[in-house]
Amino acid sequence: MPKWNDLQEQSFLESDARARAVGLVDEGTYTELAGPFDRFYSPHLEVLGEAVEFDDGIVTAVGKIGKTPVFVISQEGRFIGGSVGEVGGAKMVNTIRLAIEFHDKLVADYPDISDEEKPVVVISFETGGVRLHESNAGLLAHAEVMDQLQKARHKVPVITLIGSKVGCFGGMGFVAAATDAIVMSEFGRLGLTGPEVIEQEMGKEEFDSSDRALVFRTTGGRHKYIMGDCNVLVHNTIGAFREAVAKLAVLPVSEFEKMRRIGSPEAVERQLRAVALAAEMQPQDARDVWVKAGNPDPVALTDIPLDEFLADVKRLSV
Amino acid sequence: MEATETMMGRGRDAIDMIVDADSFNEGTIGAKTFDDPEFGPGAVVGTAALNGETVTIIASDANAFNEKFPVVYAGIIGMEEGYKMAQAVYASLEADKAKPVAEKRPLVLIVDTPGNGPGKVEEIFGMNKATGAYQLALAEARLAGHPIVAMVIGRAISGAFLCHGLQADHIVSLDANFGTMIHVMPLTSVSRIIRKDLETLQELSKGNPVFAAGPRFFYALGGVEELVGTIEGMRPTIIEHIKAIRAAKAAGEAEKLGPWGRGQLGAEREGRKVRPEVIKLMNQEFAAVAEKYAPSR
Image 1 (tube, chains in turn orange, green):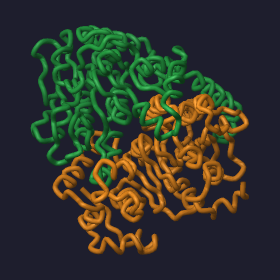
Image 2 (tube, chains in turn red, orange; image 1 turned 90 degrees about the vertical axis):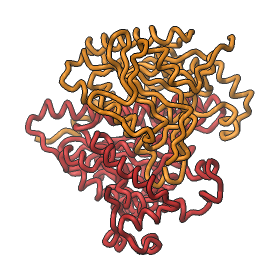
Image 3 (spheres, chains in turn blue, purple; image 1 turned 45 degrees about the vertical axis):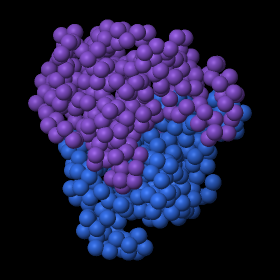
Image 4 (cartoon, one colour; image 1 turned 120 degrees about the horizontal axis):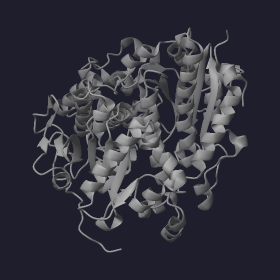
C-alpha cells in the first residue's frame, strides 16, 4: 500500500478497493471490519473449486474525515467483477446498519451533537451486481441493502462514489440511485442493463457495445451529470473524491434530501416528467438529450477538459 | 412432483381469484387516480377488498404492450411501470397517513415479471431510478406499518423480483409444480457464464440452494416465507400472512419482517449460514473501536 499522501494523487480509476477506502478517510483513522485477517470468504466459491478472497471482494471499514465518522464500503472489481454474494453482501448490509445504530447511539449520548459529528456512509461501487456463482444469496443481499438505505433516511447520509473500471451496473445500479448523493468521475459508469445485454436485446445496429464512446455517453459520468443523476463530477484522483466527500459530510441530513433523485412522491413526479420527455423525444443518442438540455454543440462536450465542461455545461431540467 | 395448471401471464386473473368478489377497482388508490390508459400499461394498480379489508393491489399485466417504450411487454417493468407502481405505494401511504399503525392498509403484490426494461432510452434516462424508486417506496410503506405481502404466481426474475417482491414483509409463492420461476438466471445460463458444467451445478444444487433456480431453493434460503400448494390456497394464505405481519408489527417485532427478517430466516433454514457470522464479528469489531469515532468532549 502506498503512503497516504501518495494515495491522494493516485488515479481513482486504477486504484484497488482498499486503496480507495484508506485514501478516503483521514490518515491514521482507518479500521477495517471483517478484513482479510478474519478470513471470511465465500463458501460457495470454494465448493465450485473457484479461487476465493479473504475479504470476498468488498472492503468494509470505519474512519474519520475531520470530525465525521465515515463508514466505508469499497468494492473490488478485480475479484469476479466486484460481484455481490452472501459474505460480501452481508458486509455491505451490516456496514450501513452499524452506521445507523451508531448514529442513534451518538444522538442519545450527546444531546449537543453537531451535524459534522454524525456518521455518514460512503460506498465506492465497482460491480455488475449479483455474483452468479451464488446468485440467489446475492439477490437477497441486494434487497437487504435497499432496506437499510431506506432505514438510513433522515439519519445517516449515504454517499455513492463511482469512478472505477467496472462501473456500477445490475442491481447495484439501482442501489446507487437510491443513495442520497452521487459523486462520479468522468470515467465512472452507472446504469442498470450493461452494454452487452442492451446489444443482445436490441441488435448491434441499435447499440454497439464495442463502441466505447457510445457506451460512455449513455452511462458515463458526464452524461449522468447532465441528467442530474450524478450530483458532483470530480477529477480522477482519490484526493478529488475525498474532497467531495469531505464537503458533503458536514452538511445536515436534510440537505441530502434535496440532492436525491428518487425516494419521495415529489421526486417520482419529477422523474415522470423526464420519462414523458423520453417518450416525446425518442432519443437515438444521449447527445439528443444534451441538446435538449441547452447544449448546442454536444459533440464538443465529450472532448473538452473537465473543468471547461463543468463551467459550460447546461444540465437537464424538467 | 406433478405439473399442474400455471398462473404465468395471468396477473389479472390472480387478482380476481385473491380479492373479494368484484371488489377490484383498477386505477384508484385513495385520492389518487390513474386516468391515462396509455400510462405504464404493464403495471396494474388499484384498490380491492380482501376479507372485507381495503387493500392496495399492484400487479403486472403480461398482455400489455407499452407503445411509447417498446421494451415493455410480457410483464416487463419499464420506466413508466416502475414509477406508476411507486405512485401506487405513495398513494396508499397518503390515504392512511392519519391512521394508526394497526389500521394501515395492506399492499398485495402479485408477482409475475420477467425483467426490468432493458434498452438504450432506458439507460439514457435511467431505468435504475425507476426500479429503485419503487423499492424505496415499498420499504417506506413497510416501515410505516403497512403490511406488504408478495404473492409469486409465475416469474420472479432477478432485478424484477428485487423491484416487485423482495421489499415485502412476507413473500409467498405458488409451489414449483405451477411452473413458478424464481431466479437470477436459469442454471443453463449460469453454467455457460461461470464455465462450470451443468451436471456439476445440478448436483451441487441438491446440497446448496444458492446455485439453483426455483421457489424451493428460495424457501431454503429464507427468500420465501411459505410455499402455496393450490391455486385456491393463495387467498387464505395471503389473509393469514397479513394477520401475522400485523401481529409482528404490533409486538414491536418488525425486525423479523422484510429483507432483514428473511436474512435471519435464511440462517434458521440453514441456506445462508455465513451471513450471521460475518455480521456478528463486524459488530464485535466495531464495538471494540466505537469510542474512537465518537465526538471528543
